[in-house]
Length: 451
Image (cartoon, rainbow, N blue to C red; front, top):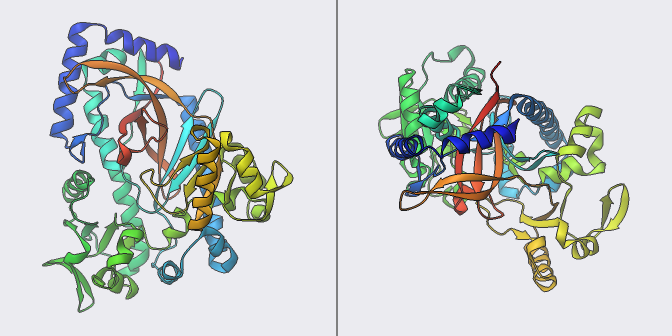
């Protein structure tokens, strides 16, 4: 059904007036809704990503089962220092992790990055610290739903969309109510905190507008604008109850001593921080090394183990020694050297596609050099290649014309307190489907045939 639906959509775009009016409305809508990332269109495609109802039900079930296993890794890490070491949490990060956030959830908001193909569904990593894209996806749904081509498409197929901002707000409030207890305010104030001048600024503005429309005083603040005194965290005159933390720990650590107000307020229990600093544990890409290592299988149920085996790629920290692969013992470095065509090397704690070495795109000499760089760095992972998804999408060229091109399709379900509540899809013409490294995004519509 999916291929039939895509072909029907592309046929509709062959009708000149439908294509031209849709192209014009998309371009105007992206500008009006501020779907701009670093000065460029965030969604320069004339078709959204389609996923069938049956496939998305399976995706949801798998994501939520894997999330239950991830929670168990977090719980075990609190008690077992060896797991903290395996995750690669640094000494200064451990100090942050030890601070009680005042609520139980480790990552109230999270994003699982994955590939859905005809034959497989595979994860590649988790963003458990500060997942972007929730508000962008909402705005993109509104734009695409109004396009003439989508209205024609909806005559044959049902369309289901998501609305992530209400779920994000309720997630913030749930954490806050647990944090504040009987002292919780009905309409707590919210500060969206990140560094200045980032390409995600437009998304912050979308969140601020929504929070205020729901009666929550809101502000967009940078760490240097925060002050902590008299038991209150402030941004100028604005007093803060909840910090929606979009600031990454890696970006905060270098400025933490010079701009300590956020940490001081958090340590004092004066502000509800979402996601909190403990999310750093499961944001580490080595999380997948713990999930797929037989040494930690005791942590999980049979259902979780089966789901991990089917959908989480075999992952290990790059280091000398032996490990298990497909039930057999192997020398890890020798295995990595001999199997470049099925492996990727990636830093344990980075984003935006930085520092990734793709084995199947490397010569033998390049792969050996990459392996030595990973060993020298000391905090690298090797991960097994997963089946990737590719589809042809109509895209807006710089001159306004529509061109068709094959794209890598990275499906990103968004979780709110462990439940899938929204999703979007990243597209790229390269091996890395990452917006920071030049990719784009489209909303993910869940479709079915009309009766």
